[in-house]
Picture (tube, rainbow, N blue to C red):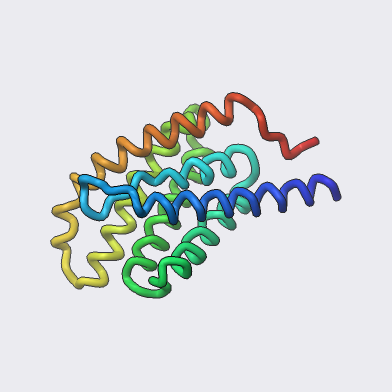
Length: 168
């Protein structure tokens, strides 16, 4: 019973942190239009490595829906871009963590960042009924890979510090 309560508390705190980081990082000015640092992905990586894929999914989907509510863009194109990018990123990160055992959190983060960007561009292209957004994809991908390394390094360092334990 105690372990279940720890997991629920860990998931709730993780979701709250991911929401706060995601919401506030949208106010960071970026030199690439439409890009964000993706710092909340540090939290998602931590949940994926410390807890389970189910708890990570809870944080991913909870973050998308709650941040969209806070920003007032629920069910508009930005919401669907976020949902598509986040879910595709999540699927790729889970699969890469499970099947590519030698991949570190940095590698998992890189894949997640790349596929998040791909998902967003796909959603926008479908919304606009045009593939022209894919011309912007290489620039966004470079930015995503750079921020993917950053978030992966931070998450990897926290995982290596072994400060969280849900098993005791």
